[in-house]
Image (cartoon, rainbow, N blue to C red):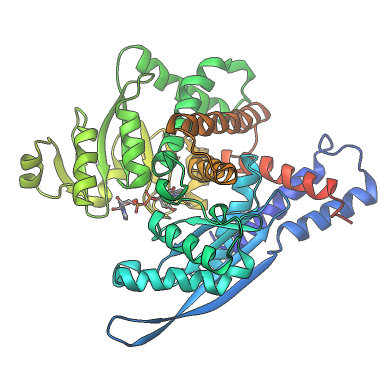
Length: 467
Ligand code: NAD
């Protein structure tokens, strides 16, 4: 999805809200029209795009010029917030789009943040640790005037981690002696003010969004309150899964991507004490591992932590004492399972392969793994897609906890951190699923964006920013 697609979607939803007379009913006629037009303009305009070049001396003494970005989309709901992505193909438009999506994600979950994002055009595995350290320091030097604990708070994203944030916060402190520095970056190591449980938070939150929908929402919702047609088909499909579980059969599940998000989500499913799952397949960038009676996910997660990838051969599996068949990497998404958790890369399910997907529920742990065309087709087939903006927000929720604890210099326990994240995730899920299923909105993703844009629009309105 490009930034233009996202802006068009914002315009469409603002038009829907304009037509919805129950939303801001006190404003009518010409004034209402003007307010919505200006809201549309503001929300489709990025506040600031900063581009710079980082000059770094490579280990062989050559000098390289690396493009780097920080984009700040909107801060009506709070300080700009969003990760810094290191990737060889990242570009200004991608960073801008991700910044807009952060504004929407933070608004949906009612976090006191706006949307921002950063990018550095490198493939991190091509650089030594010393070079990466220099790049992190230079990034802060270039953008220091635009970041800070009460202005714009970066975090890790693809290609960056707690160590990168530790280096960055160190440089921020050197440049700003005597200032509050800890809250200027989140996703730091626990020793450096990071939140306990941050690494697992996105995987746990992703799993929680699915568990809440199936085991709480479906059980507590009467079929007659669900809008007729596709929405009821989706409800019936989920009800069948719950009945399968209640009859003592396992719900089958496959997880694409076995890193921070996927391995944790797979372990949560395999060890869940509320729903009985059989995780029949997991994959990483090299292989799919399959076992029809269920994989030993805990053993695989232990192997992955040691080796940084899944076992790739029958011999490696035997040596690790794990039973599985090695299959082609891309086979996983086409398997006949009930639930598919996508936790790897973008655009995995698209117009060209969507007809081959069997799963009834698809959960987006990764960002944008289902493209717009596939999303529409899956919806029309009565399948349920829990979108990224809802499902994978556990990380930013825990970043908020980290930012709060850095202000009071107190470390919350992992249990407190995860409990707070679960409460927030469940509140967001309730809001989205209730309105989607009972009001019959045209898609769960659409329902998320409607909630987010309502909040953003009202904030602009109350701040007197619409004219
Ligand atoms: P990670 O690098 O820890 O793990 C990614 C996994 O995907 C690895 O197992 C890798 O081998 C696998 N993979 C890569 N290409 C693949 C392919 N083509 N097929 C199958 N597997 C493949 O990354 P992560 O932190 O787990 O993030 C995964 C996704 O979740 C990314 O899209 C990221 O933007 C998104 N996300 C992560 C967080 C977070 O807090 N970590 C938060 C929000 C969104």
